[in-house]
Image 1 (tube, rainbow over the protein chains, first blue to last red):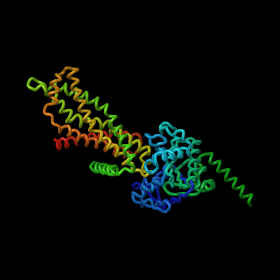
Image 2 (spheres, helix red, strand yellow):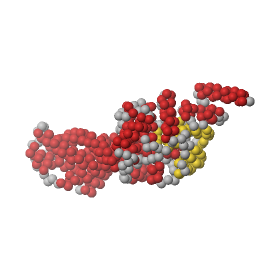
Image 3 (cartoon, rainbow over the protein chains, first blue to last red):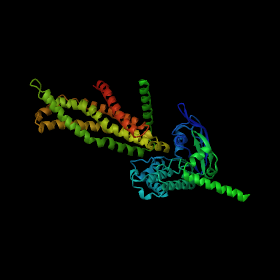
Length: 262
Length: 248
């Protein structure tokens, strides 16, 4: 479980995150949603230590990440996996070498064991046939799946994904969402996904935090999104006609349900 | 304002060097990177070094023969001056200025692209000291290979000079040999190598700094690449003055 307490981040005079309090639960896909520029990526960078908060705490199962020494932070980071918006694969390494990289760096396994473990992870994301290829030779969706395999190769306790579906078609996005959701359950990880893809919100949002202009506006799950009366949330989630219609039908059905129960 | 900016940049450079010169997490991976960098930055530069040195050696010899040589001068003067120019300045300083363009832009654009595509962030998140993993092998790789490039350059320059003698018949090969052997001071070879070690450090570390600290996109990567070459070149020229004074 990851707890964020009173987290504030300012850049000069500008407050980007204002007194954020959140809880991300273990074994669930936790989503951070919000409009572009609302502070989602800054929040995630504060969580993983790429930025240091101006004030507040980030607790990883009770351990305050902000107050840790440099050495403790490096050790802590080995419990984290991260999937970047751009996949961030190493261009000079093959797919298999990319996935094997954290093992090469930190594990005490021998070469065969490392290759076997990397291949297992590639198999989990259905990419074993692409193991000899280089990142430049595979599609964007495949790159994201390789990034997922690399993120889980060390069995992390915490998985962070920064807009994993950006630039992907809806079908591939669905594959990525299902993979992330499945992996979260399989490995019992605390997964945090930054997204403004509403298909992801409706599909895998077990715990959703809505950020609006740097502060937490709403928290709930995907079912509660449908019935929420928060205008700012509704403006974001139901921005498209399709979702507006889905919500209308949902509300009507709920009203009918209420009548029947009466 | 300008001094403040310069001091800030210098401070950041020192911090990066401090992070780079630390114990690698996994020696096996470090050695792999080190060998790769020696090949990429050094071995891949041998061709251009040999080509330029051959022609510059030949041109210096021709210029000396045509402009310095006179009945009042000894016959060996062209060979002697060609050797001294190649050994003392061209093979160390000018060759490093040329390499600052080739290797410096290579390092800055590679690291800059890694930065903007979040590959360096990915390393940091994994708990890898990205500066040590990426920058240190480049510095050590270039510093290791540079003395060999200097020796190859000097040798090729002399071969170029012989080319003018044997093919162009500009001067007699015996006169050239006599000049090349006249009053040879072995220390000049070491001086050239010592200078090149400093220059190799400047090229690799300054270019790494500009690449590693890029913020933005492809335009900034291009700018970092240019800044790396310009700053490395200026620093090489400045330090050349001091090193020549100290080592002579």
